[in-house]
Amino acid sequence: MRTMRLAVFGAAALAVTASLLTSAQLATADDFSVTANGVTNGGTVENLRPSSTVTMSVANLPANVGLYAFHCLVPPPGASPVPTRCDAGADTLMYIVAATTPQTTTRPLTVNAEFVGKNPNDRSGDQGTTDVNCRVATCAIYTLQAMTERPNPTYTKTFFTAFATVGPRAKDSAVVKLDNRVVRPGRERVVSYSKATPFTVTMASGQTATLDSKKCDVRGGEIRALTTKGSCAVKISTPGNDDYRPYKGTVTFKIVK
Image 1: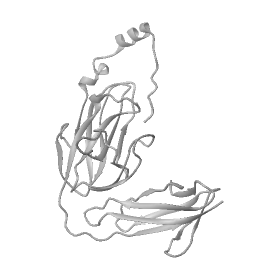
Image 2: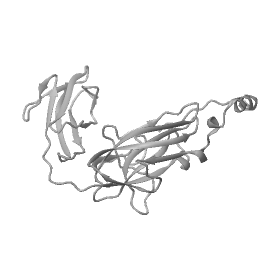
Image 3: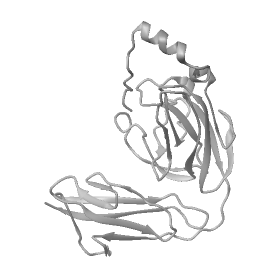
Image 4: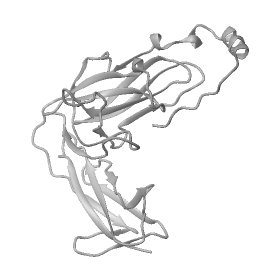
């Protein structure tokens, strides 16, 4: 999370600016509030489906303050309270960009009962992954001041999540296409370092798969190797829904120049 760069004004300029602001524009951290599906800080958002959309309602976020929200595994007792295993799937991050005036807004946030937990801070700290099941572990939605290395704790809020029990679900499957051709088991396919190749993953469940790779850049419907030799593994995962179980799979490609 990069340190936010704020303009520095002289005392005279600040005095003039303050005289022009309305009371609404002078919102401070003390005026800030946020709820998740109407639940206040420290409460529990209950009866969630395997993959649910939670409404985050933010009021009086002060000027020049941005806000993140994400769904994470709650750290165990005695550990740092900062979560390092958060969902990185589709639509699982809320980011309100800092503005020059206070903001009151509602935003959707996807929360999943099962996910591959990663550190939302990809620049420092534990960068491992953990398979998280929020039906057997404690999970919560966290809000955090955005784009600063020293977040103001006033903006850090916690909303625990409780997921409803589900019945038997079907096994999901993935159709992987490279350069518009289906990738079949046992057949070697190659990806290039010098150019991007069309790449898609379609799930039987209709869910959007999360794609993760260390040696390939996978985004925008394309894949490109980040090195000139070796192999590239792409991890495919979905959180599951009412009808399908979570999916985890890997497809591997040979890298060429």
